Length: 337
Figure 1 (cartoon, rainbow, N blue to C red):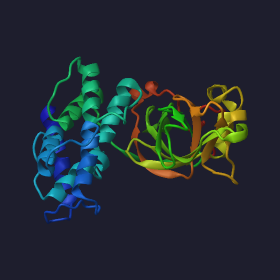
Figure 2 (figure 1 turned 180 degrees about the vertical axis):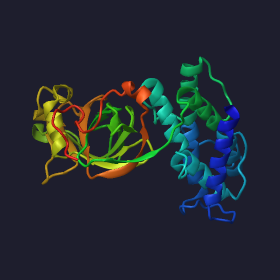
Figure 3 (figure 1 turned 90 degrees about the horizontal axis):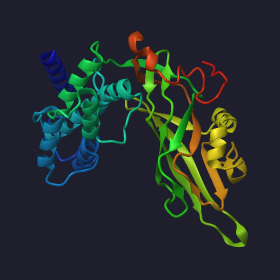
Figure 4 (figure 1 turned 60 degrees about the horizontal axis):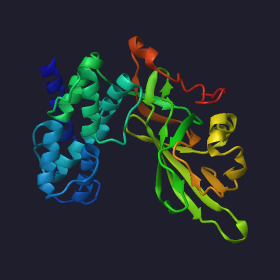
């Protein structure tokens, strides 16, 4: 079984290398960005942050840590193949991050995309096998999947309906002193998204937003303001679908007593902006000057989107927590499909 997993892994790497059309050595990545920026992205996935040292030495180390060996080809080919392997996969095999997320979800019903690849694998091994095994990260993930899901992990195209409402919470406290315009904000998904028995976004998936306006307290008792717009939900791919504070999300927030309690005794200090304001945003006014970590928000998908999901086998379907998204998370009404 181990030899079979390693053979499949080698086949995926070879397929990814064969798909790279660039045939010359260059210090520019395939997307036109500098090679150091591409390497920073690779290292952020693998280790959590960019590492020090020379370009080639860093790439060699990352390849050995993920694959157990250095890849052949030019600098651009190697970087492109590595990113595609971790993030995109092939037509027959899902990406490494897709497989890891499915394995995490199968064990803990949530994922940790904010952690490095190395930390996620170490943690999963410690839970499943009782100790951290070490070795090439890709091979370790394949071994864990063989133990957890012997039928394997495949990606299935699935459509997330428009106006699918999802429940999220802030991962940090926002104040007028610690944020500025254009700062990125990360929220986490509190309930998994399942469409037609396909897992598309486990609990813990990230929702991205950004700050659009910050005003400190002003004279004559005028309160401070923090304005935030929602951007995207990261699904299991990892791909992203656009989200906003639409009408369905607003109704879900208003119906959720926990949300109202998290923001305040009423919505007097919080304004949901309508079509004439920031249609996708949320404005907070008040003397408290902050949005606390854990504050709940509902957002909704802006359009129907086709993504890749994991078809949940019947034998483990009982671990699904929140059910199908035909019922909005945290709300009682039905979403038309």
